[in-house]
Length: 363
Image (cartoon, rainbow, N blue to C red; front, side, top):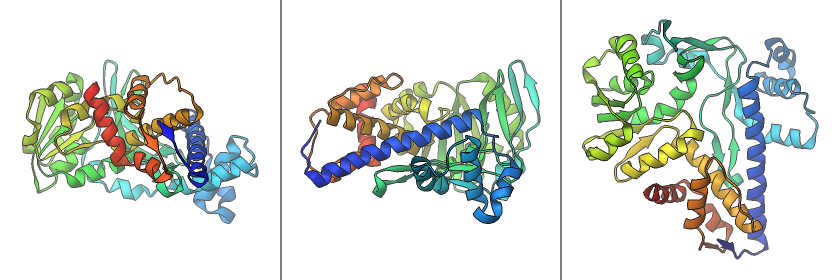
């Protein structure tokens, strides 16, 4: 990989690297906040700033103050203006409470061994990721976060294993599955059962005849069959197949299904490898993948890092995604970029997915 860029196009490439670094800085800040201090925001503190700033801006200002950061520092001001004020919003609880799953599926607290099914909650003013990042392509792939908060406590069903959340139906799941639910029709198959949110929502559709669920975990199947499935309006549409997802994909003709949905990862960080394995078997059918946009976003970060390595003459020592990084480096090793437009084309979703399919076939 090498560059033959004039001064104008080189300037754009360097801006891409700069924005990528800002993206990472914002991500690290928000990760620290959400993983360690999601309830740090106090209602009274936000209300003290509400009159002059409005609810979203008051929340952001309070967040910055809570970490003892200087709101007037140029870097903090830039991150606040370009990312936080655009990406942090209060949400209407009613928009989610009226969701059919929340309204019709009643979750009772139940404990079996190390497993616990219960109603969890977001506290009022607790921050959480409520949908995928917004990518601003024309601004050098700036990644605007999607952090939400409610003005009151908000309950949602969850399953814990050894006190660690394993499955849930949160606003994030509702938002990130909406497109797949809307597009599903006919004979549907989904890989991964969870708490049955996707299964329930597609089963309500008149144009869905059957829903097949591939799930290998006995405990998940038992929980679903005992506590959730009896509440379905269309139980007759539901068919559970106890099997390993990749074994089923490999051994069966997937073209017999009208709609295919894969949801076997917890988030984008553990999803990349599983996504690649899914692509290996499903690349010739029209499959949908949960949070595919977030997985591609993660991969784009890697490719931008690869571009920077090529420009700087360095090699990043990737640990978590070392195999994927080295494969991508090999696939693009002979690329020559004469303009920023060509680099932008490389970073498009379509181009990145083509590279991911090549990596999947090497796996």
